Amino acid sequence: MPEPVRSLPILPQIVPSQTCVTCEVCCRFPERDSFLRPYFTPQEIARAVARGVDESKFPHPDGCQVEVAPHPDGEGFLCPAFDPITSRCTIYEDRPLDCQLYPFALMWDAQRQHVVLGWDAKCPYMRDVASAEMTTSVDGLAGLLESDDIVGTLAEHPRLIGRFQDDVVIVRRLERVTRALRHDVESVFLRPLTVDDRPRIQAAIASARPELPIPLAAFSFASHYLWHSILDYSWAEIAGHLCLFASSSDGMFMVLPPLGPGLLHQPLHQAMRYMRIRNGGSRVSRIENVPAEYHDEITGLGYCLTPAGADYIYLAEDLISLSGDRYKSQRAACNRFEREHDTTACEPYRPEDRDACLAMHGLWREQKERAGLNEWERLLLNDSSVAHNAVLNEHQSMGLLGVTVKIAGTVRGYTFGMWLKPDVFCIVLEVADRTVSGLAQYVFRECCRVVKEQGAVFINTMDDSQLPRLANSKRLYHPVATRPNFTLTES
Image 1 (tube, helix red, strand yellow):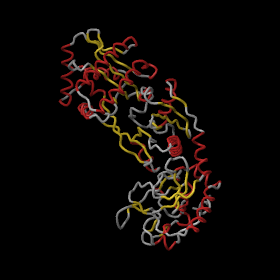
Image 2: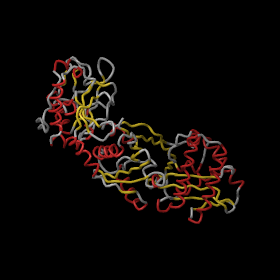
Image 3: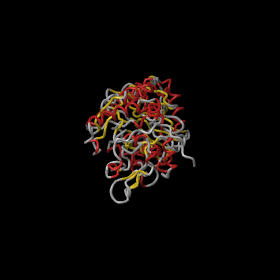
Image 4: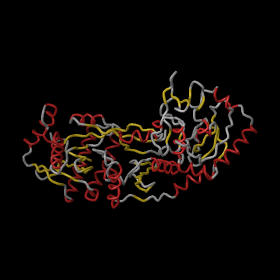
């Protein structure tokens, strides 16, 4: 295989080689997913592989951080191009730009407004270097970094710009690099989310990961639009993907990963950069509702994923039949309700039911408050009023299906949900008069019956909002699976 042509100049090395081989800082990492792992561009990956680095160490050939290997003689991890016996890099002449820079580093400043050049105080050599030599090195390096070739590479691979580090001493602001990265941000055309965007959002969701058998509830238009009076939602096309943002007083974040076909590399980096600059010094920049199926791809790009709950998945048939000992209590509750209320009607929600449902929601809130709530439960209950109002007023435009249960002609319970796929229905919200024994179980069962007749095989009841009592209730219905989701951050 011929060696690929080098596309970037070799940066000058300030630290003498003999000093490097006796140092134990570079090329070693305390964690497998350390954010300090070097980033390789596609050209750099090809050169590294040509020199013998295992191709599997680069999970994304269009650019990624290298996967490190356990240290054979101790704790921690090593770059796969590092030879611990000789303390030398096996691809030194073709090491990536990220490594060539060291002991200098590129990063965003503390306010995340400018790209800066600094030197790493962890490097022993840099603590003793003469100021005149340092100034000469900085001037020359800054000039190279602001050259057309390298500015273009940094704009194409923004992960080469690291996060702010307290132990990196800033020596120069790189204005041209900053402008290049900000240009993409300023060219993003942000549009407010309206109910008319539902077909566009749903089409983007369908194109994102059609192979997911049971999507997270968050992969729907309605699950976000119902909060539009609390959060300022907007969307933009970035690198061929639809990016759905939400803004609060803390700043902007994404409520879903970039939506579209193909790898997430480019849209993800650009979207994170966009939020980082928009949010300034705030650390709110994140992406919520990342499915487990995205885990390897995203962590391979150097981001962190933190567990953020899981949706509960059930077989519709189980929730309707309630057969066997494991459903004994739910079956008894439904039977008691049916015995005690022979004038019950389970009907599709109609606009004329709105006022009665709102009144029922108000009563339900009072009942929950009287039962006692902690601070988190009270906050969620207050927010739920916004969601219920939105659903009862705009259920059709959001694509929601509603069911009411009336006793003697009066609404005593209702539920709404949405189709995630032709065979997967998601329950979004449910209200039942807490003074009527068995009503909650009956409302849930009958809603499942309605949607099973329309093709539902699976029922998604969303997550448990970190409420122990709700989690216990969901577990008592014996889910056949849970669908974990994650929150993406840069650190």
